[in-house]
Image (tube, rainbow, N blue to C red; front, side, top):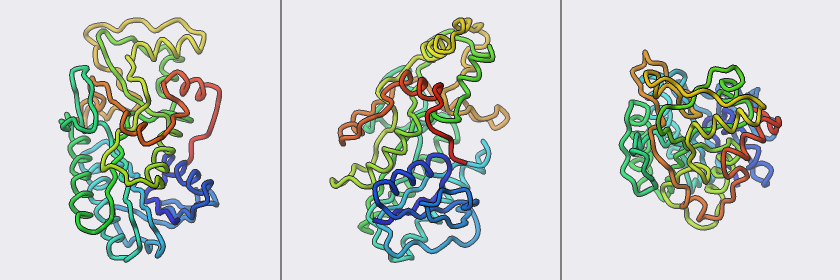
Length: 304
């Protein structure tokens, strides 16, 4: 099996290493292919402009894992909508025997659910431009692949944390973390489990569903996560925040700058991973506790 990774940042590279370890040929597109491990055949590509490299003639799976260059509406549209469209055009024009295209999306498409549960049947209700644009990209994927025989698969990930992603740890260690004044639910997934989910959905024998939610087993109150990290670091628990400051502590995913006009992407919701787990995927880090302990122990590296 040959896999094309359109976008090879930290997550895409980790997925590529796992594909390669399973015996698959892996081709990666990114702006700086020289940074990729040797087992990933790297090609220089800017998904938003210029000519794209040839799609491997024997590619059977394509993973699109992009990120915006900046927290602006223009950057999100260029990466998620324009970049995806160009990849899909290249795939269809190539004639390669692609069977699945997996698009890495975000649970930001749900916005706020008032603390309730959301799953694959919940109607999206994005609260900001990032969620709206990513949802537009999901629809583009379905529209472009309809009737082609290529299965579109959307994986909506929660806040990614893992090696080198230490924002919350740094906040606690630096004494800058405060406990939210009210309920602030967070949904996250360790980078390694997100990569494992990508590989699993691209290689499973059964036909995948068109949509999965990629989060760990335990939605968690931000206050619980911060208190846990303080205890692991041997530090006092963070102080409660002032009511006037409520809402300023976000999820593991960085909050876009206020100047962008984008609200916090997390929203107050509990995201279910039941459908993903039902495919047989087992999580190495089923909750933030196992995952953050591994991060604090220095397990793994963040890929450049």
